[in-house]
Length: 283
Length: 295
Image (tube, rainbow over all chains, first blue to last red; front, side, top):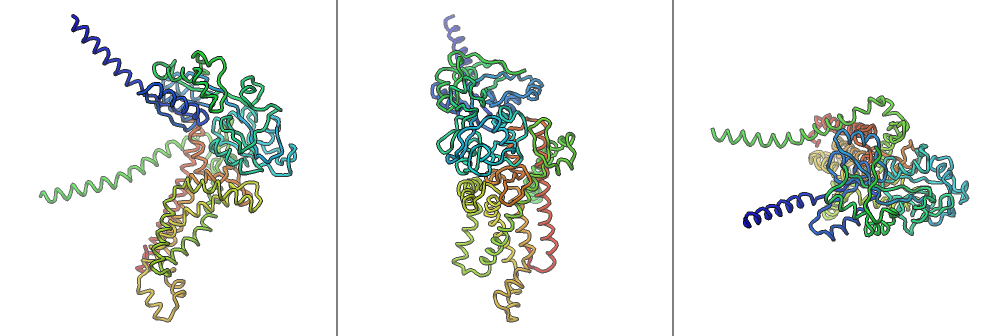
C-alpha cells in the first residue's frame, strides 16, 4: 500500500515536472516601443526563476498581434489597441485577445539643441506635420526651412501621433520617414532644420524636447493627462493568462516590474502597480 | 548494368539539387503573386502604379506607388552614373595596365568592398556622409538622393568591376597581338580593340550592378530619407520600393489591403529586376557570335 502510494506520488511528481517543463517556454513578439520594458522585465524574471525560458522579438505591434493570432506568440506587445479587423481574424481562429495595460508612453516632439523654439501647440505641430507651416520663423524660430521627420506610416508610434496630434489628417508626403525611435534621435541630433517625435524612453541629451501646449512632458504630466500626447502600452494574451504567461504579466505589473518600466523611461501604470488586474480588450 | 544504374542515380541526385533552386524560385513567385494580386480588387493596376499618393494606413487608404518607383529609379540611375565609370575603369586598370603586384592588392581590396554588410555602409551614410553633405552644401537634410546614390555606388562597384574584369580577360591574346602588330599604342589597343571586344560582358556587368542597386534595401532604408513624394531636386528625400516594404511590413495588419499592397510593390520590384536580368542575358547572347571574346 505504502509502496503503491509512493509510486503514485512519484508518477505525479514526474507528470507535474513534465507539464512544467513543457509550459516553461514563452514567446513574446511585438512593438519595438514596448521592447525595452519587456527586455528588462524578462531578464529580471528569468534571473528570479531559473529554468524559465522566454524568447523575445520585435518587429512591430502588427507583427506581434499577427503572432498571437497564428499562435506563434504567447504574448503580443503593442503600442496601439488591437484593430477591429485583427479581432475578427482572431475570432475566426478562435483566439481571444485580452489586453493588459503595462505602461504609459508619452510622445515628445524633439528638435536640434540649437533650435530657438522651446514649445509648440498641438495645432502648430499638426500644421507643421501637414506641411502647412514650412519655416521655423512662423513659430518663433530662425528663418530656416522645417524638415519634418516622422515614423513610417505603419508604426504604432505614427498611429498614435496621427491620432493625437494630426487628428487623422494626412502627414505631408515630403516628410522624411525613419524606421525607429533611435533613428529619429540620430537624424534630429545632426540636423538643426529638423523636427521629429519619439517615445519618452528614447529621449537623451543630444536633442531638445519641446513643450506641448506649454506643458512639459514628464511622468507626472503624462499620468495626470495634462500632457496631451500620451498613450497606454499593452501586452495581449489569448484568453485570461495562465501558468507562466500569467506569472510574467503579473510580474510586469508588480511593484518591481513597474520600477523597471520607470527605469526604461516610461510612465508606470498607477494603481495597477500592486495587484494584477487586467483590462478587457476592445471587442 | 550496375554501372549504368550508378550513373542514373548520380544523374538523378544532381537533377534534384538543380530543381531545388528552380522550385524555390517558383514557390516564391507563386507566393508573391498570391499575396499581391488581391490588392487589385481595391485599386486598378494603373492607379496602383501611377497613383501619386501613398497613404496605406489612412481611411480611405491610397495605394499609389509612383513616388516609390521614381525613388527607386532615381537612386539607381545616379548610383550607376557614379559606379559605371568607377567600376569599368578600375577593371580596365586591373586587367590591362596595372603591374601584377598592384593588381593583386587592388583586386582583393575591391573584392573586400563587396563583403561589407550593407547595414554598415548604411550607418556610414547616416552618420558620416549625411552631416557632411548637409554642412558642405547647406542643405535642410543630408538623407537624400545624393547620399543614397553614393552609398549604392560603393556597393555596385565590386559587382561591375569583377564581371567587367572577367570579360576583359576573356579577350583573346591574338586580338591584342594583332593590334600591336599594326603599330597601335597600348592606349589605342585598350580603347579600340579590347573594350569593344569585351563590351557585351561589360554591359552585362553594368546591368547586374544596376539590378543590385535597385534591389538593395538596408542602405535606402537608412539614408534615402524616406519621403514618399516625387523628388524635385537631387537633394530631396525619396522612398525607394524596398525601403517602403521593409519599413512597413512589420506593422501592416496581416491579410489587409496594406499587406497586399506591399506584396504588389514586391511584384513590381521583382518584374524590374527580372527585366534587368533578361536584358543582361540578351546582350551577352546577342554578341556571342561576334568573336570568341564574350563571357
